[in-house]
Every structure is written in C-alpha cells, then in structure tokens.
Image (cartoon, rainbow, N blue to C red; front, side):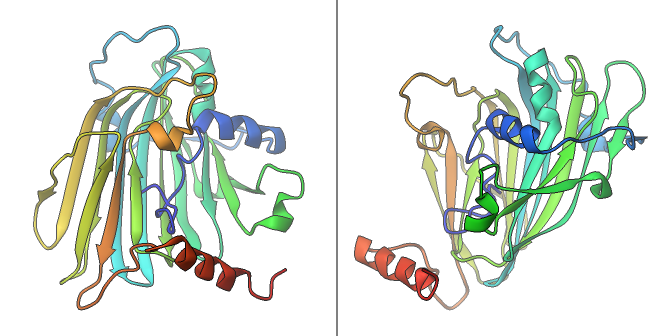
Length: 282
C-alpha cells in the first residue's frame, strides 16, 4: 500500500525511487561486507523465468513483481506488507538496490530485509539489522518533521541480476483511505494489491489515470486486484507531478456501523482540521 494515510497508507512512490536513492546516498554510506549467503524466497525465484519484452535503451530496470497486502485490524490499526522484485537491465538501474521505507510515531516498521539473485552464483540476503536510519535528506530536516527512513542496501544490484525486498509496517491511520500507486518510472510486469477487511466493513475504489479493474473476492472480506504490463512514466520538462499522471487506485474504507472520514466537503473543513494540528505548535 502506498502509505500516506491522509493521502494513503504508505507513500513510497510519492517521489521516484531513483530520486530518493540519489538524495539518501549522499547521507548514508552502507557496506555489504556483512551480507550473507541466503536463499531468496520462492516468490522471487518465481520471477527468474519471466519472459520480458525488449525494452528501449532508456529502461534501466523493470519491476517484475509487486505485492501489497493490506490488513485492516481496526480504525486504529492497519498492517501492510510489501514485496517487490526488480531486474536490473542497465548500470543506472543500480539505484534500485537502495531501499528506503519511512516511519514516524504513528507508523512502525515491523521488519525489513532484502535479497539479490545474481545471474551467476549464490543468492545474498540482507537482514533487518543491517538497515540504517536517516532523517529527511534536507538541511535541518530533522527539525521540521518527525518522519525518518530506514534504509537497506542490497548488494550486487548489477545488470542481469534480480534484487528484491520485503517489509512490514503497522500504522495508526489519520484517514481511512489508501492509494495503490502501481505505475512508476520503471515498466511494471505484474502488480498485486489485496485488502483484508474486518467483518461488516466496506470500501469504495476510485481509479485515476487507468481503466477500472474489478477485484476478486476470495472469501472472508478479502479483495484482490491485479494489473499487468504497465508502461513506465517518462519524465519531461515542465511535466505535471508524477502523482498527477500515474495510474492509481484510491480506496476509501467504511467501518461497520459508521461512516469513514472520507475527506473534506469544503476547503474550510480542511482549514479547520489543519489549524487543529498546528494549535500550540507555532
């Protein structure tokens, strides 16, 4: 889930991965000396035989597989697990090996780890204890925001290799709304999103910059969506923000027996909410 709870649960595509990788790399020096040999999980190995189309020379990597699993426990707790695997195609794709996940007092990272599947040789694993923490990559950023990042360096993110990672977060949401951002600067072969709701809960899905995809309901209020072969977003001079042109699904949640805080009916409503957040903080 792309976490932004006021915008959605998990904003890891709010800016492009390569952009954040460059910023964070300036402040974080990571070593792979402690990386150990370890088999990558089956969901990664399943991607090693994927048949890919021929990409142009501007394509540095392809997102082979993405899986976001969102479990709503209550109005005060939502759990999200994210798994992603990239195949590195060109040297500039090495930035995909630098994984960053944000956290704050309302959002806890329960675990993170990564793997590399070399075209030749044994798999490598990077465990949670090898991750480092950093504040915003801005001068004085630690003074204006309580958002921090856990950063994991996956070794050997070289052309021909597959790198992947998995992390789990637990969040106390401000708004019962989430955004699945399934389109990015790399082409996407396959992306999945699942939503597990408590008994009696309902949801509304709205699609932006992409045709509607109907979900599959397996059982017990579990809903699943899949998109395939999503094209990359190419940056252009003076283009709109990526979030304004990328394919997304916005999910609004409705608790049993009540209404969800779905947003603001007017700008004045938002102003009152924002003024409440600022009260006593100037």
